[in-house]
Length: 265
Image (cartoon, rainbow, N blue to C red):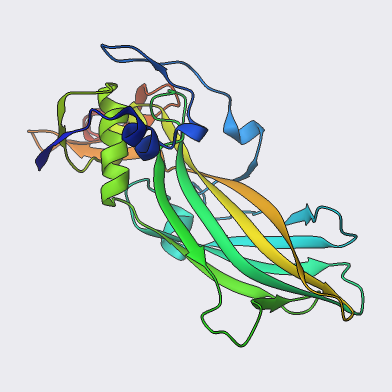
């Protein structure tokens, strides 16, 4: 645990990823507001069940007559319980649909940002992790893809890196300056502040070559929401175990309790 002081507004803006956050700042703190329901805007992976159906994305490529297909899948642990503070993996399979003969496509670069999704503006959009993936040799334009050839990629998402912890501090504290305590937080801390999902946003930088022409670049974006596991198990001083289910506004209900089990016997 250590103290952290940031008085530079530009630095704070970078940490919080202000492009994705609607913050109303004052000298004393941050006014929290309810934001739009991201699950109504983007495709969603609900990680709270055993039988998870993940919709395949078929994305238009600007100015082209073929499409980019992105298939998502979760690792076995995240599939059952996608926790904000856990390290986790999101897998993708990327290929084309409707690509004609004589047209070649490579993925030059993939940039992916993972951010928080919350009902409180102070927490919504905080950057959790970033990833860049590109081919690591000079012999090829990039990862080749077509209707039958796919790029298989794994996005390893850090649960608690330094940037995320720093951004979380200011999300929880709601202040633009001063000295606050930088520390690791628990999943329940985020759930209490209205965090209910991660948004994974990727930009695929494509290189397209038609016949003998020079390759040119086109970017295609993909967004997916993965809902966070919203149940927390706690043990009190008497050893009784209770299961708390958090709602999107940060409130909770006790859905299971040793005390209730004993009364039912």
